[in-house]
Each structure stands twice: as structure tokens, then as C-alpha cells.
Image 1 (tube, helix red, strand yellow):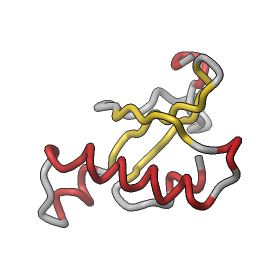
Image 2 (image 1 turned 60 degrees about the vertical axis):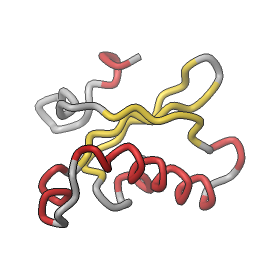
Image 3 (image 1 turned 30 degrees about the vertical axis):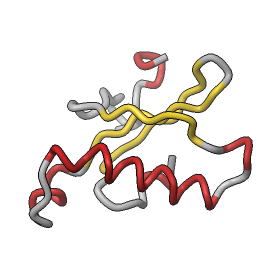
Length: 88
């Protein structure tokens, strides 16, 4: 998740296991997207490129098989960590 969060236009991410594969839920950095003059329509391609970059940097067992773009920030605890149990 830390590596994914460091990629362009990613505000937050959450990596889960679903059916034996890793799935990334990504909340985009919409402010950075707008500042760069990009549109929401370009977002799926940008995130797919980000997934490709990440998968080249990690071991086979750490590779993301699919990516889901979420429109709302992840719900957080009072100490600002993501409530992971809500997304399983």
C-alpha cells in the first residue's frame, strides 16, 4: 500500500485478498488530477499504468491482479487509519 500511495494521482489505497488474488482499492488524488489538466475519464488508464509500474517493482506474490477506483475517501478510525473491516 505504501508503494501504491507513492505513485502519481493516488491519495489512498487499500490492498485486499479476494478469491486468492490481491485487489487494490484506490482513492485517487482528484486535486492533483485537476491541477495537471487531466480528466476523470483518463483515470482508469492512469491507474492501470500505475498498477503496471508497481507490479514491476514487487515480487510475484505481491502483484496486484485487479484495481478498483473508489469515489469516496476510505472511512477512518479516530487515529486516521483505514477501517479495513468495512472493505472485506
